[in-house]
Length: 450
Image (cartoon, rainbow, N blue to C red; front, side):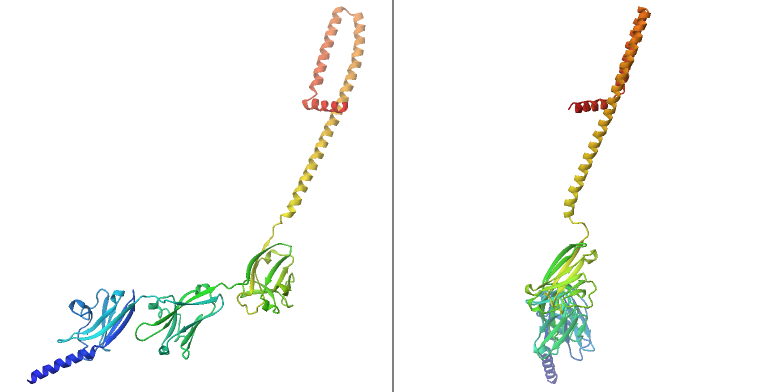
Protein backbone atom coordinates (compact mmCIF):
# COMPACT_ATOMS: atom_id res chain seq x y z
CA UNK A 1 0.00 0.00 0.00
CA UNK A 2 2.80 2.27 0.86
CA UNK A 3 4.46 1.43 -2.36
CA UNK A 4 1.27 2.27 -4.27
CA UNK A 5 0.95 5.58 -2.49
CA UNK A 6 4.58 6.31 -3.16
CA UNK A 7 4.06 5.55 -6.82
CA UNK A 8 1.03 7.79 -7.05
CA UNK A 9 2.93 10.57 -5.33
CA UNK A 10 5.81 10.23 -7.74
CA UNK A 11 3.45 10.35 -10.74
CA UNK A 12 1.74 13.44 -9.38
CA UNK A 13 5.08 15.08 -8.71
CA UNK A 14 6.22 14.35 -12.20
CA UNK A 15 3.00 15.71 -13.66
CA UNK A 16 3.37 18.86 -11.62
CA UNK A 17 6.94 19.23 -12.84
CA UNK A 18 5.78 19.06 -16.45
CA UNK A 19 3.10 21.62 -15.84
CA UNK A 20 5.39 23.95 -13.95
CA UNK A 21 8.01 23.77 -16.67
CA UNK A 22 5.54 24.54 -19.40
CA UNK A 23 6.23 28.31 -19.60
CA UNK A 24 6.16 30.14 -22.93
CA UNK A 25 9.36 31.16 -24.69
CA UNK A 26 8.92 33.74 -27.44
CA UNK A 27 11.45 33.80 -30.24
CA UNK A 28 11.57 35.95 -33.37
CA UNK A 29 13.68 35.90 -36.49
CA UNK A 30 14.02 37.29 -40.01
CA UNK A 31 13.61 35.46 -43.27
CA UNK A 32 16.87 34.17 -44.63
CA UNK A 33 18.59 34.54 -41.26
CA UNK A 34 18.90 32.31 -38.21
CA UNK A 35 17.37 32.36 -34.74
CA UNK A 36 18.35 30.76 -31.45
CA UNK A 37 15.96 29.10 -29.02
CA UNK A 38 17.38 29.08 -25.49
CA UNK A 39 15.79 26.46 -23.20
CA UNK A 40 16.70 26.47 -19.48
CA UNK A 41 16.34 23.33 -17.34
CA UNK A 42 16.59 22.55 -13.67
CA UNK A 43 19.51 21.18 -11.74
CA UNK A 44 19.91 17.43 -11.92
CA UNK A 45 19.16 17.14 -15.65
CA UNK A 46 22.61 18.04 -16.91
CA UNK A 47 23.28 14.53 -18.24
CA UNK A 48 19.83 14.00 -19.71
CA UNK A 49 19.11 14.18 -23.42
CA UNK A 50 17.63 17.45 -24.67
CA UNK A 51 15.83 18.13 -27.92
CA UNK A 52 13.68 20.53 -29.97
CA UNK A 53 10.46 19.38 -31.61
CA UNK A 54 7.36 20.77 -33.39
CA UNK A 55 3.61 20.20 -33.35
CA UNK A 56 2.65 17.26 -31.09
CA UNK A 57 6.29 16.39 -30.55
CA UNK A 58 6.01 12.80 -31.74
CA UNK A 59 8.98 10.85 -32.97
CA UNK A 60 8.66 12.32 -36.45
CA UNK A 61 8.40 15.84 -35.05
CA UNK A 62 11.76 15.86 -33.30
CA UNK A 63 14.09 18.28 -35.18
CA UNK A 64 17.36 17.98 -33.24
CA UNK A 65 18.68 16.22 -30.12
CA UNK A 66 21.88 16.56 -28.09
CA UNK A 67 22.76 12.98 -28.92
CA UNK A 68 22.44 13.51 -32.70
CA UNK A 69 24.38 16.75 -32.83
CA UNK A 70 23.76 18.76 -36.01
CA UNK A 71 21.34 18.15 -38.86
CA UNK A 72 20.29 20.04 -42.00
CA UNK A 73 19.20 23.48 -40.70
CA UNK A 74 19.28 22.68 -37.02
CA UNK A 75 22.00 22.50 -34.41
CA UNK A 76 22.02 22.26 -30.61
CA UNK A 77 24.43 23.08 -27.81
CA UNK A 78 24.08 22.25 -24.10
CA UNK A 79 25.72 24.54 -21.56
CA UNK A 80 25.60 22.36 -18.45
CA UNK A 81 27.16 25.01 -16.24
CA UNK A 82 24.35 27.46 -16.96
CA UNK A 83 21.84 24.62 -17.39
CA UNK A 84 20.64 26.02 -20.70
CA UNK A 85 20.58 24.26 -24.04
CA UNK A 86 20.30 26.31 -27.21
CA UNK A 87 18.80 25.13 -30.49
CA UNK A 88 19.65 27.11 -33.64
CA UNK A 89 17.42 27.25 -36.73
CA UNK A 90 19.10 28.69 -39.83
CA UNK A 91 17.79 29.95 -43.18
CA UNK A 92 14.42 30.91 -41.76
CA UNK A 93 11.33 31.16 -43.90
CA UNK A 94 7.75 32.09 -43.18
CA UNK A 95 6.95 28.35 -43.00
CA UNK A 96 9.11 28.08 -39.89
CA UNK A 97 6.81 30.32 -37.86
CA UNK A 98 4.67 28.56 -35.26
CA UNK A 99 4.86 26.46 -32.11
CA UNK A 100 7.88 24.46 -30.94
CA UNK A 101 8.82 22.53 -27.79
CA UNK A 102 12.02 22.39 -25.77
CA UNK A 103 12.20 18.86 -24.36
CA UNK A 104 14.22 17.07 -21.69
CA UNK A 105 14.04 13.28 -21.95
CA UNK A 106 13.09 11.32 -18.88
CA UNK A 107 12.16 7.70 -18.16
CA UNK A 108 8.52 8.38 -17.52
CA UNK A 109 7.36 11.76 -18.83
CA UNK A 110 9.56 14.27 -20.61
CA UNK A 111 9.73 17.89 -19.55
CA UNK A 112 8.40 20.30 -22.15
CA UNK A 113 8.60 24.07 -22.52
CA UNK A 114 6.51 25.74 -25.21
CA UNK A 115 8.21 27.97 -27.79
CA UNK A 116 6.47 30.50 -30.04
CA UNK A 117 8.52 31.43 -33.14
CA UNK A 118 7.66 34.52 -35.16
CA UNK A 119 9.36 34.98 -38.56
CA UNK A 120 9.32 38.42 -40.23
CA UNK A 121 10.63 39.72 -43.57
CA UNK A 122 14.13 41.13 -43.30
CA UNK A 123 13.20 44.63 -44.36
CA UNK A 124 11.90 47.84 -42.90
CA UNK A 125 9.86 49.98 -43.00
CA UNK A 126 6.43 50.83 -44.41
CA UNK A 127 7.15 54.53 -43.94
CA UNK A 128 10.41 56.47 -44.24
CA UNK A 129 10.72 60.02 -42.94
CA UNK A 130 12.25 62.36 -45.53
CA UNK A 131 15.30 64.39 -44.51
CA UNK A 132 17.30 66.74 -46.75
CA UNK A 133 20.81 68.09 -46.40
CA UNK A 134 23.44 69.85 -48.50
CA UNK A 135 27.01 69.00 -49.35
CA UNK A 136 29.63 70.11 -46.81
CA UNK A 137 26.93 71.01 -44.29
CA UNK A 138 25.40 68.98 -41.44
CA UNK A 139 22.01 67.40 -40.86
CA UNK A 140 20.18 66.04 -37.81
CA UNK A 141 17.97 62.94 -37.77
CA UNK A 142 15.43 62.63 -34.95
CA UNK A 143 14.38 59.15 -33.81
CA UNK A 144 11.54 58.65 -31.35
CA UNK A 145 11.03 55.61 -29.09
CA UNK A 146 8.66 54.37 -26.40
CA UNK A 147 9.14 55.32 -22.78
CA UNK A 148 9.75 51.69 -21.74
CA UNK A 149 12.82 51.68 -23.98
CA UNK A 150 14.33 54.69 -22.24
CA UNK A 151 17.30 52.77 -20.86
CA UNK A 152 17.81 50.50 -23.85
CA UNK A 153 20.61 50.77 -26.38
CA UNK A 154 19.97 53.13 -29.31
CA UNK A 155 21.77 53.08 -32.63
CA UNK A 156 21.53 53.94 -36.31
CA UNK A 157 22.67 52.03 -39.39
CA UNK A 158 22.58 52.43 -43.14
CA UNK A 159 20.23 50.43 -45.33
CA UNK A 160 16.90 48.84 -44.49
CA UNK A 161 17.93 45.39 -43.25
CA UNK A 162 17.01 45.02 -39.58
CA UNK A 163 18.75 41.66 -39.06
CA UNK A 164 22.24 43.15 -39.41
CA UNK A 165 21.56 46.73 -38.33
CA UNK A 166 23.05 46.48 -34.86
CA UNK A 167 26.20 44.78 -36.13
CA UNK A 168 26.62 47.45 -38.80
CA UNK A 169 25.61 50.45 -36.70
CA UNK A 170 27.54 53.63 -37.55
CA UNK A 171 27.07 55.00 -34.05
CA UNK A 172 25.39 53.82 -30.80
CA UNK A 173 24.34 55.42 -27.53
CA UNK A 174 27.25 53.58 -25.88
CA UNK A 175 29.77 55.14 -28.31
CA UNK A 176 28.42 58.62 -28.88
CA UNK A 177 30.91 59.78 -31.51
CA UNK A 178 32.17 57.96 -34.59
CA UNK A 179 33.74 60.14 -37.28
CA UNK A 180 31.12 62.34 -38.85
CA UNK A 181 28.33 60.65 -36.84
CA UNK A 182 27.30 61.59 -33.31
CA UNK A 183 24.30 60.66 -31.15
CA UNK A 184 22.48 62.38 -28.31
CA UNK A 185 19.76 60.61 -26.30
CA UNK A 186 17.12 62.83 -24.72
CA UNK A 187 15.37 60.42 -22.34
CA UNK A 188 12.95 63.07 -21.12
CA UNK A 189 11.42 63.55 -24.56
CA UNK A 190 12.01 59.87 -25.52
CA UNK A 191 13.96 60.89 -28.58
CA UNK A 192 17.52 60.43 -29.73
CA UNK A 193 19.17 62.63 -32.36
CA UNK A 194 21.86 61.57 -34.80
CA UNK A 195 23.95 64.36 -36.37
CA UNK A 196 25.92 63.82 -39.59
CA UNK A 197 28.55 66.44 -40.48
CA UNK A 198 30.56 67.12 -43.66
CA UNK A 199 27.84 65.68 -45.82
CA UNK A 200 28.57 64.33 -49.27
CA UNK A 201 26.22 62.88 -51.85
CA UNK A 202 27.48 59.44 -50.88
CA UNK A 203 25.70 59.91 -47.55
CA UNK A 204 22.35 59.86 -49.33
CA UNK A 205 20.19 56.79 -48.79
CA UNK A 206 18.12 54.89 -46.26
CA UNK A 207 18.89 54.72 -42.56
CA UNK A 208 17.33 52.75 -39.70
CA UNK A 209 16.97 54.14 -36.18
CA UNK A 210 17.14 51.11 -33.88
CA UNK A 211 16.22 50.46 -30.25
CA UNK A 212 17.59 47.23 -28.84
CA UNK A 213 15.32 44.98 -26.79
CA UNK A 214 16.43 42.14 -24.58
CA UNK A 215 13.56 39.95 -25.72
CA UNK A 216 12.12 39.76 -29.19
CA UNK A 217 13.21 41.82 -32.16
CA UNK A 218 14.63 45.31 -31.99
CA UNK A 219 12.37 48.23 -32.83
CA UNK A 220 13.13 50.31 -35.93
CA UNK A 221 12.03 53.45 -37.69
CA UNK A 222 13.12 54.43 -41.19
CA UNK A 223 14.69 57.64 -42.47
CA UNK A 224 15.56 58.53 -46.07
CA UNK A 225 18.32 61.12 -46.39
CA UNK A 226 18.83 63.15 -49.56
CA UNK A 227 22.04 65.14 -49.85
CA UNK A 228 21.81 67.84 -52.48
CA UNK A 229 24.64 69.56 -54.27
CA UNK A 230 25.64 72.76 -52.53
CA UNK A 231 25.13 75.52 -54.98
CA UNK A 232 23.74 78.65 -55.87
CA UNK A 233 21.08 81.12 -56.74
CA UNK A 234 22.37 80.84 -60.31
CA UNK A 235 25.10 78.91 -62.07
CA UNK A 236 26.32 79.88 -65.51
CA UNK A 237 29.34 80.28 -67.78
CA UNK A 238 31.03 83.45 -69.05
CA UNK A 239 33.62 83.69 -71.84
CA UNK A 240 36.10 86.43 -72.67
CA UNK A 241 39.07 87.25 -74.91
CA UNK A 242 42.63 87.90 -73.81
CA UNK A 243 43.34 91.63 -73.52
CA UNK A 244 39.68 92.66 -73.46
CA UNK A 245 37.45 93.32 -70.42
CA UNK A 246 34.75 90.93 -69.24
CA UNK A 247 31.82 91.56 -66.87
CA UNK A 248 30.10 89.05 -64.56
CA UNK A 249 26.67 89.65 -63.04
CA UNK A 250 25.91 88.49 -59.50
CA UNK A 251 22.32 88.64 -58.21
CA UNK A 252 21.64 88.58 -54.49
CA UNK A 253 18.68 88.40 -52.12
CA UNK A 254 16.97 91.75 -51.43
CA UNK A 255 17.49 91.09 -47.72
CA UNK A 256 21.24 91.32 -48.37
CA UNK A 257 21.10 94.80 -49.82
CA UNK A 258 23.27 96.25 -47.06
CA UNK A 259 25.60 93.24 -46.83
CA UNK A 260 29.15 93.24 -48.08
CA UNK A 261 29.35 91.78 -51.58
CA UNK A 262 32.37 89.91 -52.85
CA UNK A 263 33.81 87.75 -55.60
CA UNK A 264 36.20 84.93 -54.84
CA UNK A 265 37.98 82.36 -56.96
CA UNK A 266 38.44 78.64 -56.34
CA UNK A 267 37.20 75.23 -57.39
CA UNK A 268 35.31 74.94 -54.10
CA UNK A 269 33.73 77.57 -51.91
CA UNK A 270 35.66 76.26 -48.89
CA UNK A 271 38.91 77.02 -50.72
CA UNK A 272 38.10 80.36 -52.29
CA UNK A 273 40.37 83.42 -52.60
CA UNK A 274 38.60 86.79 -52.41
CA UNK A 275 39.38 88.84 -55.53
CA UNK A 276 37.30 91.95 -54.84
CA UNK A 277 34.82 93.26 -52.24
CA UNK A 278 32.24 96.01 -52.20
CA UNK A 279 34.04 97.40 -49.17
CA UNK A 280 37.64 98.43 -49.81
CA UNK A 281 40.08 95.87 -48.53
CA UNK A 282 43.85 96.01 -48.30
CA UNK A 283 43.91 92.29 -49.11
CA UNK A 284 43.02 92.94 -52.75
CA UNK A 285 46.19 92.59 -54.82
CA UNK A 286 44.82 92.45 -58.36
CA UNK A 287 43.31 95.84 -59.17
CA UNK A 288 42.01 94.69 -62.55
CA UNK A 289 38.92 93.53 -60.64
CA UNK A 290 36.27 96.16 -59.91
CA UNK A 291 32.85 95.74 -58.24
CA UNK A 292 29.80 97.92 -58.84
CA UNK A 293 26.70 97.36 -56.71
CA UNK A 294 23.24 98.07 -58.13
CA UNK A 295 20.89 97.87 -55.15
CA UNK A 296 17.86 98.75 -57.29
CA UNK A 297 18.21 95.50 -59.26
CA UNK A 298 19.53 93.46 -56.30
CA UNK A 299 22.69 92.56 -58.19
CA UNK A 300 26.28 93.68 -58.55
CA UNK A 301 28.68 93.63 -61.48
CA UNK A 302 32.30 92.54 -61.38
CA UNK A 303 34.51 93.67 -64.28
CA UNK A 304 37.95 92.28 -65.10
CA UNK A 305 40.00 94.58 -67.32
CA UNK A 306 42.80 93.35 -69.58
CA UNK A 307 41.75 89.73 -69.31
CA UNK A 308 44.55 87.14 -69.06
CA UNK A 309 44.58 83.48 -69.99
CA UNK A 310 45.29 82.64 -66.34
CA UNK A 311 41.99 84.27 -65.28
CA UNK A 312 40.03 81.26 -66.51
CA UNK A 313 38.48 79.21 -63.72
CA UNK A 314 35.64 78.98 -61.20
CA UNK A 315 34.37 82.07 -59.39
CA UNK A 316 31.83 82.52 -56.60
CA UNK A 317 29.99 85.75 -55.94
CA UNK A 318 27.71 86.33 -53.00
CA UNK A 319 26.49 88.52 -50.20
CA UNK A 320 26.14 86.12 -47.24
CA UNK A 321 29.27 85.58 -45.10
CA UNK A 322 27.71 82.44 -43.61
CA UNK A 323 27.61 80.78 -47.04
CA UNK A 324 23.93 79.92 -46.74
CA UNK A 325 22.62 77.67 -49.46
CA UNK A 326 20.98 79.45 -52.37
CA UNK A 327 22.56 82.89 -51.85
CA UNK A 328 25.44 82.53 -54.27
CA UNK A 329 26.23 82.53 -57.97
CA UNK A 330 28.74 80.07 -59.38
CA UNK A 331 30.47 81.34 -62.54
CA UNK A 332 32.71 79.33 -64.84
CA UNK A 333 34.95 81.75 -66.76
CA UNK A 334 36.66 80.65 -69.98
CA UNK A 335 39.26 82.79 -71.76
CA UNK A 336 39.83 82.56 -75.52
CA UNK A 337 43.27 83.52 -76.77
CA UNK A 338 42.37 83.29 -80.50
CA UNK A 339 41.63 86.34 -82.64
CA UNK A 340 37.95 87.14 -82.95
CA UNK A 341 36.23 86.77 -86.32
CA UNK A 342 35.48 90.39 -87.14
CA UNK A 343 39.08 91.57 -88.08
CA UNK A 344 39.23 88.83 -90.71
CA UNK A 345 36.27 90.43 -92.48
CA UNK A 346 38.36 93.53 -93.13
CA UNK A 347 41.76 91.92 -93.65
CA UNK A 348 40.75 89.49 -96.42
CA UNK A 349 39.27 92.10 -98.84
CA UNK A 350 42.33 94.34 -98.31
CA UNK A 351 44.70 91.55 -99.21
CA UNK A 352 42.68 90.64 -102.30
CA UNK A 353 42.66 94.26 -103.45
CA UNK A 354 46.43 94.54 -103.05
CA UNK A 355 46.99 91.35 -105.04
CA UNK A 356 44.72 92.59 -107.84
CA UNK A 357 46.55 95.91 -108.05
CA UNK A 358 49.94 94.15 -108.19
CA UNK A 359 48.80 91.90 -111.04
CA UNK A 360 47.54 94.90 -113.05
CA UNK A 361 50.87 96.72 -112.64
CA UNK A 362 52.85 93.67 -113.72
CA UNK A 363 50.63 93.19 -116.76
CA UNK A 364 51.05 96.79 -117.88
CA UNK A 365 54.80 96.63 -117.33
CA UNK A 366 55.09 93.52 -119.50
CA UNK A 367 53.01 95.03 -122.31
CA UNK A 368 55.10 98.20 -122.31
CA UNK A 369 58.29 96.18 -122.37
CA UNK A 370 57.06 94.12 -125.33
CA UNK A 371 56.05 97.27 -127.23
CA UNK A 372 59.55 98.73 -126.74
CA UNK A 373 61.15 95.58 -128.11
CA UNK A 374 58.84 95.66 -131.14
CA UNK A 375 59.73 99.31 -131.84
CA UNK A 376 63.44 98.50 -131.79
CA UNK A 377 62.95 95.56 -134.11
CA UNK A 378 60.87 97.62 -136.56
CA UNK A 379 63.52 100.36 -136.67
CA UNK A 380 66.30 97.88 -137.35
CA UNK A 381 64.24 96.24 -140.08
CA UNK A 382 63.66 99.58 -141.79
CA UNK A 383 67.35 100.46 -141.66
CA UNK A 384 68.20 97.06 -143.09
CA UNK A 385 65.79 97.64 -145.96
CA UNK A 386 67.37 101.04 -146.77
CA UNK A 387 70.85 99.55 -146.77
CA UNK A 388 69.74 96.80 -149.08
CA UNK A 389 68.28 99.35 -151.50
CA UNK A 390 71.56 101.32 -151.70
CA UNK A 391 73.57 98.13 -152.22
CA UNK A 392 71.20 97.06 -154.95
CA UNK A 393 71.58 100.43 -156.73
CA UNK A 394 75.37 100.20 -156.60
CA UNK A 395 75.28 96.65 -157.73
CA UNK A 396 72.94 97.54 -160.56
CA UNK A 397 75.38 100.19 -161.80
CA UNK A 398 78.15 97.61 -161.75
CA UNK A 399 75.92 95.24 -163.62
CA UNK A 400 75.26 97.86 -166.28
CA UNK A 401 78.97 98.51 -166.70
CA UNK A 402 79.81 94.86 -166.74
CA UNK A 403 77.03 94.16 -169.15
CA UNK A 404 78.46 96.60 -171.50
CA UNK A 405 81.88 95.02 -171.21
CA UNK A 406 81.01 91.34 -170.68
CA UNK A 407 79.39 88.72 -172.75
CA UNK A 408 75.78 87.63 -172.55
CA UNK A 409 76.94 84.51 -170.83
CA UNK A 410 78.40 86.54 -168.00
CA UNK A 411 75.21 88.62 -167.75
CA UNK A 412 73.09 85.54 -167.37
CA UNK A 413 75.48 84.20 -164.76
CA UNK A 414 75.37 87.49 -162.80
CA UNK A 415 71.62 87.72 -162.86
CA UNK A 416 71.35 84.14 -161.67
CA UNK A 417 73.76 84.84 -158.78
CA UNK A 418 71.83 87.99 -157.84
CA UNK A 419 68.56 86.08 -157.58
CA UNK A 420 70.16 83.41 -155.37
CA UNK A 421 71.59 86.08 -153.06
CA UNK A 422 68.23 87.77 -152.78
CA UNK A 423 66.51 84.54 -151.77
CA UNK A 424 69.20 83.74 -149.19
CA UNK A 425 68.90 87.22 -147.67
CA UNK A 426 65.12 86.95 -147.44
CA UNK A 427 65.34 83.54 -145.67
CA UNK A 428 67.83 84.89 -143.13
CA UNK A 429 65.50 87.77 -142.31
CA UNK A 430 62.50 85.47 -141.59
CA UNK A 431 64.65 83.13 -139.56
CA UNK A 432 65.49 85.96 -137.13
CA UNK A 433 61.79 86.45 -136.13
CA UNK A 434 59.84 84.13 -133.74
CA UNK A 435 56.09 83.57 -133.63
CA UNK A 436 55.81 85.87 -130.59
CA UNK A 437 57.74 88.61 -132.43
CA UNK A 438 55.42 88.39 -135.37
CA UNK A 439 52.39 88.54 -133.07
CA UNK A 440 53.78 91.54 -131.19
CA UNK A 441 54.63 93.32 -134.45
CA UNK A 442 51.09 92.89 -135.58
CA UNK A 443 49.86 94.38 -132.32
CA UNK A 444 52.26 97.26 -132.65
CA UNK A 445 51.28 97.96 -136.26
CA UNK A 446 47.65 97.94 -135.35
CA UNK A 447 48.34 100.31 -132.47
CA UNK A 448 50.19 102.70 -134.81
CA UNK A 449 47.33 102.68 -137.25
CA UNK A 450 44.98 103.75 -134.52
